[in-house]
Length: 476
Ligand SMILES: NC(=O)c1ccc[n+]([C@@H]2O[C@H](COP(=O)([O-])OP(=O)(O)OC[C@H]3O[C@@H](n4cnc5c(N)ncnc54)[C@H](OP(=O)(O)O)[C@@H]3O)[C@@H](O)[C@H]2O)c1
Image 1 (cartoon, rainbow, N blue to C red):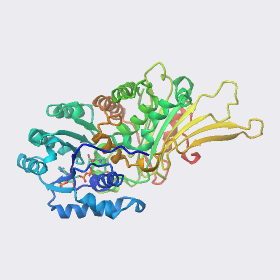
Image 2: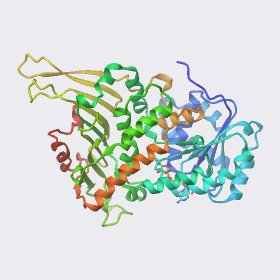
Image 3: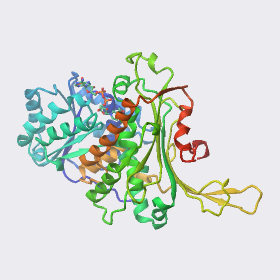
C-alpha cells in the first residue's frame, strides 16, 4: 500500500500540551504518523502551555506518554527518539501578547518555517480558546506561511454560544483556515460509512426510508465520568455524546448521497439531515443517572445531569417521515459497545413472529457490518443466517491510524471530508437546544439506574410506542 506523505514543511502546535488529551491521544497519534513515515524532512512539533517545562522535560513527558499509550507491538524506540529531535516546548500564558511574540520568534528560528504550514491544535478547555485565537492572529503575518486552527469539540455549549464563538473566530480567520473536529469522524469505522454507501449499490438501495422500520444508534460505556466530572456535570450525556458524535453517524447513514465526493457536497447533505431532525414531545425522551453519580466529588446533591439518555426522533423529509430513529447513550453500563441497527420492514405476508432483517454496523469493540437474513423457513423453528464483513469497516495494514492521527494527517494534507462545517454544528445545537428546552419545560423525569446494568428500564417505552424493541447488543 502506498501511503500518502506530507510534502510541505510544517509546525504542529499543541495548545494545552500539558493536559490529558495531549498525552493520551495527541502524542501517540504523532508517534504513529512518524512510524508510518508520513512526515517531511522539515517539521517541528511544539507543545505550548503555562506549566513550566524545559524542552528536555517536555521530550521526556512526550516519550513517557507515547510509551504508555501505544500498543507494545508498534513501539519503536529508534523512531521515537528520531521524532523527539523535532519536538519543542514553549511555556506561555494563553492571554499574553508578549508570550506569543516570544513564540513567534521561536517559530522563525528555522528558515523553512516562513513558508511552512502552521497547524495549531486546541487541546485546551474552551474557556481558553478566544485569547489564543486573537494572539495567534497577531503573529500570523510575521511567522509567514499558512496558519490553520484545529478546534476540538465542544464548539460552544448551545446554539447561541456556538454562533458567538464562530463570529469571534471569523473576525480573525477565514473559514478555510479552520478545521472543526469531531474525533468520531477520525474513527476508521465511521469514515467507511460514506465510501461503503457510495460504492455499493446493494447497501445503498437498502438505506431508503420506505423499506426501513426503524434505526437504532447505541453508544454504551462501561466507564463513568470520574476524571472529567467537572466538565461532565456542566454538559451531561446529551451534549457530550449525542450533539455531535451520534448525530454525525446518523447523518452519514441517512443523508442523500451526493454524486461528487467533494467535502462541501457531503457536508451539505449532512446538514440537511441534522437540520430536519424533529422530536415531537417529552414522551420521546428518557433520562437516567447512575446511582453513585451524586456521591462523586464535584457533583451537586440536586444534580439533574443525565448520564444516560435515550430519545425517539424523526427526520422531517418525505423519504424518512415515519421512520422512528432511536438514539441512546450512557455511562457506567454493563459494557462498552457502539453500534447501529437498521431494522427493515417485514413483507406483509410473512409470519409476524419472525424476526425482521437487519443491517448492523458495529463500531466498537469490533468494526464490522452484518446483514441478518432468515433461513430454513421450512424447519419448525426458523434459523437466521448472517452475512458478516469484518473487513469492510476496518482499516487495513499500515493505513490504520488512531482517530486523531487520521484527522491531523487530513488537516496537513488539506483533505476536508472528515471535518465539520459550522452549519452542521449549528444545526445540531439547534436540535439539542430543542431537546434540552423540552426536558426543562416538561420536567422530564430522571430515572436512577444501577451501575453495570443496561440503563433505565423506561427506555423501552420509546420503542414500544412503535411496537419495536431495542436491539440487544448480546445478539451481535
Ligand atoms: N481528554 C480527552 O480524552 C478529550 C476527548 C475529547 C475532547 N476533549 C476536549 O479537548 C479539550 C482538552 O481536554 P483535556 O482533557 O486535555 O483538558 P485539560 O487536561 O483539563 O486541559 C488541558 C490543559 O489546558 C490548560 N488548562 C486547563 N484548564 C484551564 C483553564 N481554565 N484556563 C486555561 N487553561 C487551562 C492546562 O495547561 P496549563 O495549565 O499547563 O496551561 C491543561 O493541562 C477540551 O475541550 C475537551 O473537552 C478531551
